[in-house]
Amino acid sequence: MKTSSITDRPLLHEVMSKSAGLNIPLQVALELTYRCNLRCAHCYIDITEKDELSFDEWRKILDQLKAAGTLYLLLTGGEISVRRDFLDIAAYARQNGFFLALLTNCTMITPSIARAIAGLKPLAVGTSLYGASAASHELVTKIPGSFHKTIEGIKLLVSAGVTPTVQVTSMKSNLDELPQIEKLVAGLGARVDITTGMAPSKTGAAFPFEYEPDCHELIECGWQPDASSIPDNDRPQLCKAGKGICSVSPVGDVFPCIMFPMKLGSLKNSKFDEIWSLEPCAELRYLRLMRRSDLFACKTCTVKDYCQRCTGSAYLESGRTDGPSPSACRQAQIRWRLKNKEV
Image (cartoon, rainbow, N blue to C red; front, side):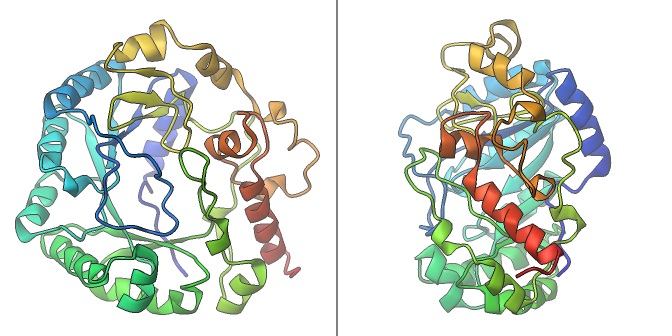
């Protein structure tokens, strides 16, 4: 199955790698809201925020990010379109020279919204499908009618000149439908990105790994890891979290990335450059100094070359930034067994 990444831009990745070494926050994820009109079984967001930032507050944050060197913004949620001003935020970002990517479940896309998104000229628009039919998709989303709305939203985007990337998380419930999902997405004129692995919830209270297919199930459905799923772990540096990327929550809290719930500061109380550069907290300073050799549990691992360890997930699962991530270990074992045909 051919996949396409939402940020599949080689030049962008090269620039990001260099900026991370200089602690320039080139890419920032803006979580505009945690609210959502779906109730996906495996969703990693288990936080409810009532005091969301206003448009004016987001505008001031964007001004600060521009001054800090940020070029690339991911607008995500929750579901961004539950905020009536999400297009205003996006438009202000584009007016200030930011490149944009948007994540949306597409259920609230209208012809006018699709045209407005097209006018933003985003680098990428991502959405999700969990099945090739309403029954299988809505088994995950828990909302009747959501499959039809997502399909119609994708069609509207394509008609407006936007080619969305449909992200498909491989689950026990949809493994048998992956070829049909791929065919459906192609017929809609969109791209597909099929992935494996689940993320723990933001608070660490939920670990939805029971939805993950095991190695035997992946073999039976014909899935094989491609080159993009085998990470380059020869580099001494870890991921770019807290160096070249970060995230801002709906209430203005700054984190190393979306999946890394270690609060670095609040933009309601401090300026971004104070949190990021002038007065970084001890945890951020340590994170920036960490190297792969500091991962004590990984040094003797026999499948570390197949591991896509997320520092944020490791922090949630082990309580340490340099600790192990059992979910990543499990996925690495699966990749190794599939690659070496040992099932």
